[in-house]
Image (cartoon, rainbow, N blue to C red; front, side):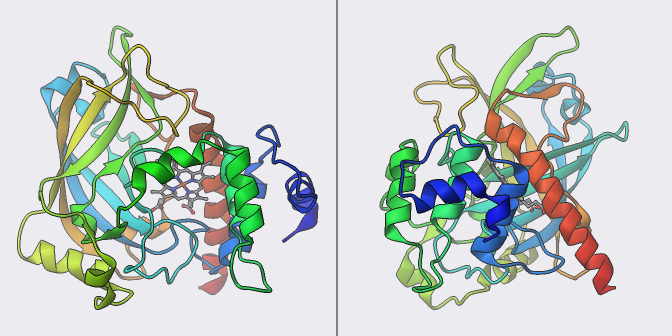
Length: 335
Ligand code: HEM
């Protein structure tokens, strides 16, 4: 761990004092903490390191066009480059162990604008702030002496960021080992604001729901025999045998919904709009696959979709940019 880069966080942890939610968390500190936790795979992403590229197409509905002027929602067939991934910085993360999973999308819109999304298969986020994200990386970094996170640091983190209990409880007893990337629902988690041509703003969270209505996750026993790398083959096999698609749903915020805290789910009845269909065309696994050189910055948005003031959402682009710059430079040196 580079002490110079993490003075406040490290001193707080070492002193065993309660962690402060107001401790500064710079994107550099966050990426360095991830590198220290997972190690560095030159040329690879610092988070969501293990993944698979794909291409596909998105087509929106008229209901979505009524909420946003974005060309994403005007009913055209939009080409998509995407990436499925395992959360965390382990390039060899075993597919048959519980984890979070991502789906990132880049839409190339008819007018040339790019629009991006990077979503997770979690219903909501574990932490409410970038500080929480940083402190989680620090607290869960394996202790070199034991090869495991120090339980005292994990406990101190959980006490300082009590919101983490919410996701823990929501996922209790659930397996997070996917039956396939095509079976998972992917959620925006952060809130975004849709805007019409006449300026009407609608806060939403979105989700991509798989058409295949089958068990999304496997039990430990079911997963054991599958080995560490079955997700790529399963996706290709499933695509070879037929169509894979997701419905995009927009959930419209109620008056009392939290717009700036991704660790708070929106509960109770909500208006949900069917916004479109994402269809997968091809799985791309070679070293030159298009998604490898994309930075799926979630604030690369088209006109008609704006970010909310969620501080976690705004902490993401600078961290992704650092990861992207590092991996691009490393890849250039490898050529
Ligand atoms: C403070 C909070 C967060 C930080 C600091 C962070 C950081 C990162 C970093 C550094 C990367 C690698 C970027 C690259 O090299 O291209 C990444 C990838 C990713 N993140 Fe986050 N992340 C955060 C929150 C989230 C949230 C809330 C979501 C989902 C709602 C999310 C979804 C993803 C996905 C899907 C990827 C993989 C994108 C790809 O396939 O290239 N992250 N994140």
